[in-house]
Image (cartoon, rainbow, N blue to C red; front, side, top):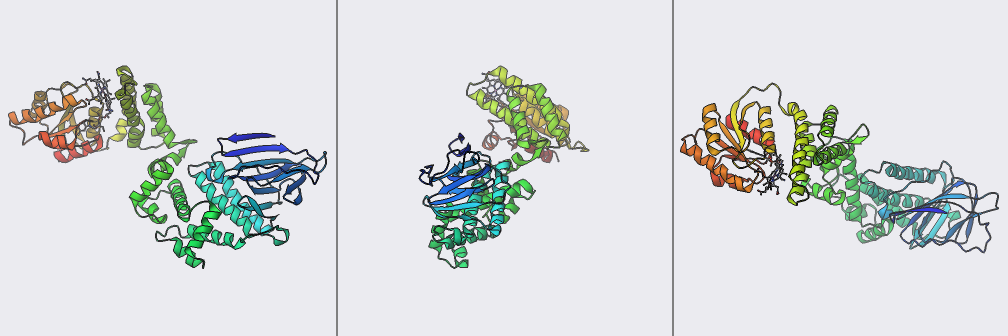
Length: 504
Ligand code: B12
């Protein structure tokens, strides 16, 4: 018997059973208490024995059992050995797996409570169809392996077990305890799915619709699904939100409404907690083109910026542009994301100046491709600004981005470069008739130069005519106010908006 045990969650086996059945054989005991086992006879035929019941099993017969239930497969004779594919898994923690396929019409099932089979029977055709429906949904989820698939499978498996138990053929049943409980829970599950958009849905309202008490329904729910009612509702809502993010272009607000969630902040919190990412990141990760996810191309860009691979960046950014991805997103999610990882590593002394420089160069290669796209076409120059990195500071990546975005807004920009003295800023503004001076600083030690620019403008008597904007990673709104500058913004796009407004 060859079994694959995948990360403690899935046990897959394909086994040929060649022990000829004799009634005194001891049955195998899986002893995996939390596990569900689904087996399909894929070749040959033989005997399946569970407790005292013996059945002939043929190709296509399927058995669902709770883990730890003693049962076994046996050959009837050595010419005809049954080959059985088995999948054992913890429904709460399915991670990997394949599902054995069957075309046949023969289905058997077992329903278990506290590891003891309470029923075991053949399915009638109506039940079989329902069973197949649920089963194919599970297979679909396994195949797609989209991010919420484990939660979805868990729900489907609960549905599957409940579905089969609703069609117990009494003639073949060994013993059935409370089949009504299963029917109630199954009805409650459908009710939850149907009323998913209703944010006022409560256990109480569903219990009263099904004529059971709240506490009874809660207990039954826990027993049948292994989850509380609240957790089940949450899973259904997250599942639906994922589907809508994946398959529609609905806004977050609309999704919140359709999934019966309270408001956008709670949607974000819930999504982040259970999906480990924001709804936006999820949507991005699910959009595909040419077999790749959008997220993966951004990640690739980011990684290649970090590795300083200018040539690859050129190709990747061009590819992203050709595929119609928004330029601003390529910049933020790809190029700048990569640069910020490098920044963190630089800070922790994991990389040094040369690596940072090649990363900056790679990023710039990408920025040059995006530049025409970030510019707004057909805009007349509406004002003039001068920009530079302050004295003592050689960082110019941010400054260059700000310049580019400002030009994109139709502003004329005089670029003073890096290491710019206060008087150069002010004198240039006077000589060139600039309405705004933009100072960039990346070092805490050079931020102070910005205060000198403000003072210089006062000294030269132009402070009331020329606006002063400040920015760069260490600069803050407070600092801006403290030194008497006019505007601070944290990123290039809003810097361009603000400058256009000041000039206008
Ligand atoms: C790239 C980089 C370098 C490159 C610069 C290459 C270049 N051509 O610019 C090199 C390797 C040369 C370098 C050198 C140094 N660096 Co350096 N560097 C960085 C790094 C990794 C990234 C900076 C960057 O470009 N970010 C990306 C851009 C897009 O962001 P940004 O500049 O903030 O710009 C955005 C906004 O702030 C805003 N903005 C920018 N300017 C303006 C202006 C206005 C008016 C407005 C409104 C908005 C605005 O818009 C931009 C786009 O959104 C940072 C780490 C970091 N995480 O920031 C360290 C960092 C800035 N460097 C640092 C240091 C210490 C140095 C060195 C002293 C190292 C050394 N030991 O030699 C030297 C200093 C050299 C000098 N005299 O300037 C420190 C600064 C620490 C501090 N608190 O002062 C940092 C923070 C790293 C760290 N944590 O240790 N560095």
